[in-house]
Image 1 (cartoon, rainbow over the protein chains, first blue to last red):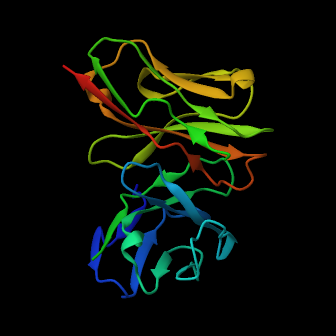
Image 2 (cartoon, one colour; image 1 turned 180 degrees about the vertical axis):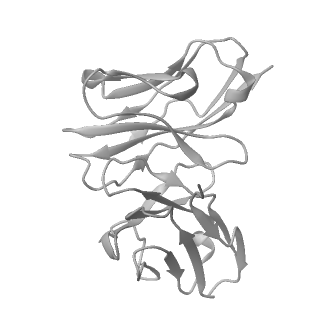
Length: 114
Length: 115
């Protein structure tokens, strides 16, 4: 079956611009996670959703970052006033339910802020 | 700071050599432990996981890992590596009872296997 998909695969933007990154989880998965991976580092947790609600957004670095999952399926990570330090690969994962269920990762979106 | 540490950043082995990648975590209490692998050009995927019970867990492709609670370690092993094992390996932890699903990753180890 289809895995987790993320669009776009690459995004180049200028400092100060607004970007949206999209994640389509595996059908039927209620839990959805966002991570950020900088070069040479492991993924870093940002936020996760159980259904439509953000269960834990403690990893969002500041209020320029926001994520939504309005219908409990697709999620969008939104970054306002992008900075060069936001450049990273943004990973999305989904699991059948929240907790220790296996998380299935998407291919990521590589964001470059010039 | 509380964290997950992977000792080796870059490991180079010849085919048929044995592999051990170190992972230590600094959290007290209950932990759920994972190894993820990312093959070149592919997504992160689960290699194996430990929640409770037998501390020696077996995963896909002949990998295994041993949880040693007294050492706060969860090292990954494979008796004989193949060229196709070339990849980046990440150790990760979910703290507590596991209700959150929040994975905390180490910085990763790049394994290069020479044919």
